[in-house]
Length: 180
Image (cartoon, rainbow, N blue to C red):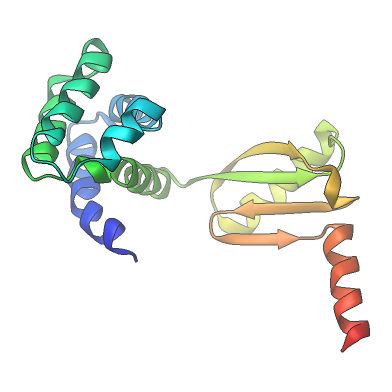
């Protein structure tokens, strides 16, 4: 766990616990998803990088609240204010990621990226989905990405695991073994 993650963890846990206790997980998920998009904007990233200055934490808070005001509940706004008071808004993106990890764990869901050289047919995607749900014991949502460099086969990124059955990877392993 890096420093940002360990510092952001209590904020994410507090947000998750509050949302769960108040039956507001979906609402907090939507609000935090919006905040994640906002903090990834170039102008906001620039302010985040300059957060060493005393006044910039308030500038960032004002920027976020101005751009998202009507979509954020009073609870989320208060959460942001607490982070700003503790000079932790720099960790907002990490906090949001941790919140979504906790939410997915609670809901027993998992997002999976499937990389292929060519688009898979629907029945192939269903087979992969069913196999992954059986393996992980969670409801799986698949996003397919086309990567012609794989040549053929499939590479699956599921959480921290990578299942690589691509032809490119197989050829690479063969070349390494031949040189050894």
